[in-house]
Image (cartoon, rainbow, N blue to C red; front, side, top):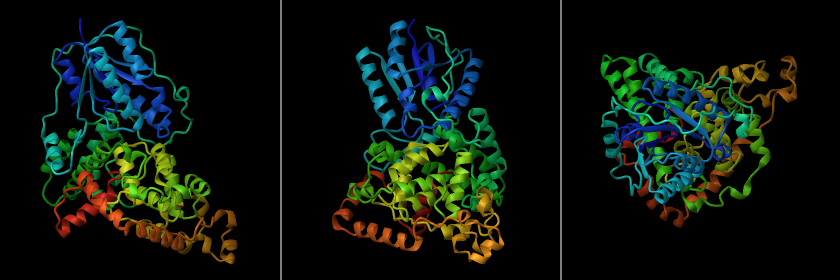
Length: 506
């Protein structure tokens, strides 16, 4: 009896699962998830990602059991697993969602396509987000995104038939067996579709009222933000599902309800979620090379290991920066504005190249989505060639978003005795005040660089490069391929700027 394989990747759900529905309409299906050792050996992989996926697989397993099926988890390289499976029990097709992942998954998917061609196996991929394969330019992208969202959610046939795995199931390996370290944020969100649906309902019904005005400050953002990003990143929830649920809830609310404005802003960010992933889909090299190649050499030869180590350890000396690193280490999450600030501080006063910083942050972010992540790393570092550089002052950000130092004191216990007047620049405290408050010099690290002069030098270097005629000339092609198509009104320009800087997280 012929059957098809449904290969689950970052689409860990049964609802609105286009690949599963298509396979089920064509005969028996075998549902497969492959734990790939080579994938988990990549420098952007972390234990927290793996544990979240394992939790999500359990939910998908339970949902398939309700349908009379089973999600089989197999450890090995994908080509090896497919070859073994095909030799034991030949199948006719593989069904999967398109994945805009890292360089490793891109090469792997190409290899799977070649394997299918050699073995006469059909290779069917379906859009996961409003991201378009082989898109020539952005002129039609907005309409294509809306068309994707407007499509009905797919449903499974009532008479779905499942095929068994031709060998006994084995439990997935422990994280340590894959070479992943023991670090896992103790406060990270729970994985799985059930948790995602709970977070979605809570946000739509309650927390969305805090969304506008609440997502910038690290004090209010943990509750004001949707907190749906990891469930979208790993496909526990479908993007179309979330957009439609949000639009429906918005339509049910009375005019003037604060949640209406919050949900309107949230829908806009769901659109920009796909806008950024489209960049990596259209330009896979964005993950490891400057989008504008004229910026090659800007920072690559100036790597400073001491500065990077201090950033990773949360010992830059700028309290808000170090508090954000501490929160990220504890929770695997940080709100968009503080993420942008971290990258800006790394790129400008610390003058660190975005690639190593991006790999470190990829491992820190539970909701690591390669398309969004690498687009933002480059945008915040000024190497896209099409975005106005946004250089965040960590002292100003602290005063704007944590004026009394509540967030800083929460995450940096050694600064709790520092008076409010000195909380953002504690190294400037007079010696007599330090003694009076029982503070040792080691409690008040001095910043690695002088913020003002280091930022000024960084701006000089960046803007001198941007002003060169050949750099300007290469910008047009990048805009055609990756630029948004917002209307050129002043309001449109303002909205574009806001979205561009806010979309690290939603």
